[in-house]
Image (cartoon, rainbow, N blue to C red):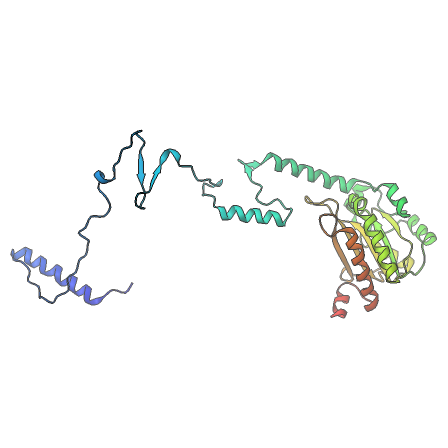
Length: 327
């Protein structure tokens, strides 16, 4: 803070003069042109008790605010809402949480009852968790595969428990599966479509029909040849490398169930790769994920996949290589 040096000198001079006058019993004489300095106001601030105290016919006690003639009755005052930490809630915070909840299905601002979640929130969590478990351990209905005309082969996984513990076995076809594919599938097609339950049988059950039929129509419109579509039970994404070695297609499209979460247990992914073979790296694969009724609509996803496949064939690349070539 910058202080006025002249003012400080004046105040110091006044104090010294008053002290000297007090000791000598004489009044201090000041020059006529000297500036008067007041340290404190001599006027009272506010109202006296006599002025502020008021009574009313019903005996209610009233309090005055700083605004003239404005009164508040304590009997009609409402307490302000507070958070769990004792801080007042503000309307802008509530509005912000409401806006967030409109934009995401995640559990945002659901609140708590003491130290635990609210009953409704907890029950919904348990329901979503149960749906995720059912998606992993469920099976794709046989009538769906029959309706789409898909035959079924197995990976090297024996059961669901082994499928979860041994991802490497889900990346390889069983010997019987390889023989059945060689026997029933068209060799060297332009596009080979494969479906697999992966980590969500529910994703296949809910979305496969719409995605597959839409993709089939899209490839037909683009005059792109399709191979013989089939279904791999308990397969992983990299099983497309075994399929590429056996059938030698230009592009493999794998429609597979995604790992379920607590928001959706029926999300499907479509992985694509140009000429997958043993030793293909993950950077050469590309994926369109989150295909379900709450994400990318299945019919729209199928049509879009046809456009992506057209680009893969044009540039003879997929994944990172496709992005680099496309510029």
